[in-house]
Image 1 (cartoon, one colour):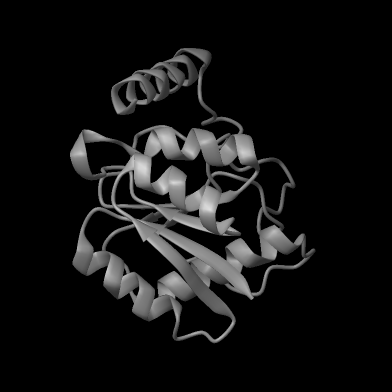
Image 2 (cartoon, rainbow, N blue to C red):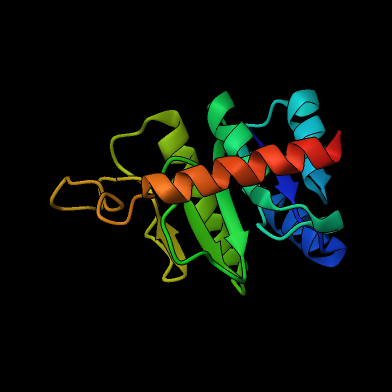
Length: 172
């Protein structure tokens, strides 16, 4: 069973995600959070396999802080956002599923995340048009990382780390 944590500040969207995810008996939503602080607590409490993460969260926090911590913990992150950053976050997330999306697109994205998590050689699902992958998959015929050219520059990585540090200080 795949344990999934939803980090979304819109309560209706979080409820919709939970409903859609749990249509699949092999997926279990272990918790929801609406800001960075509660998300990090939920990660510690529930030890999820995958985190669906919005980038714009409640109480002025962002998903970048959560994504950095998830990367440190080796927890697979799939960003779910209506306002996608203009740069790849390959070191922080598997990819980005752009809002709005259908239930089928969500299920395909989760199946892909599960395949990556389980280390499967062949991925089961096709990639939805609104899913941008940051990490390489076997769908890439050249076997070159799809995100290599768009990888975060050192300057952008530093900016994310600084944002993480500032949020951490503000939440203390």
